[in-house]
Image 1 (cartoon, rainbow, N blue to C red):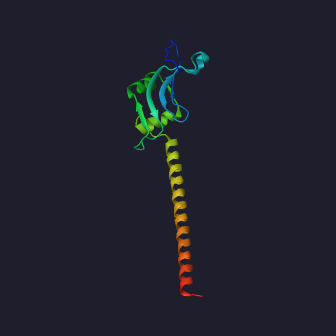
Image 2: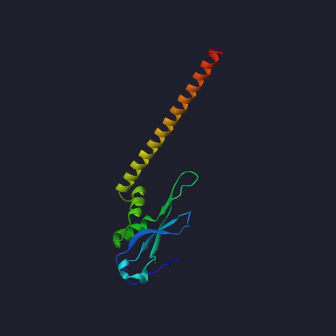
Image 3: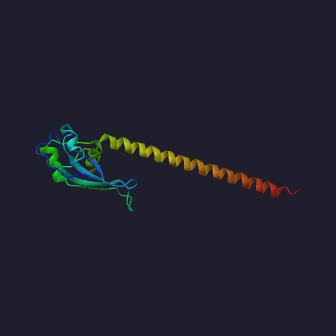
Length: 147
């Protein structure tokens, strides 16, 4: 388990996600970590937890994020903390920062994936309709020409 520590000199802190979930149920804490230049002694230690992120959608298809904007502004503004890309994406979507370009790329990829799925469904429906028409025409032809 990670410990909450306050070293005397921790250099330039970084803000990132710490995994606190299970194998099939991820859950992240948005945490402030000490500078990695301090060495392995402080590796994995947390200075402060400033939020949480639940990446799995709930019953209403929402991914829940809770952030303490006051503390984030303190760490970013006064302590000049480095921010990881996943946290930058969350902060962009929450409105604290501009939206990260990676969010736009992910949205574009998702739209393309949905369009491909819709085309597949339409093609399968057209194929099924064609087969049904062929069966209906062969059935009608068989009834019109009795042997």
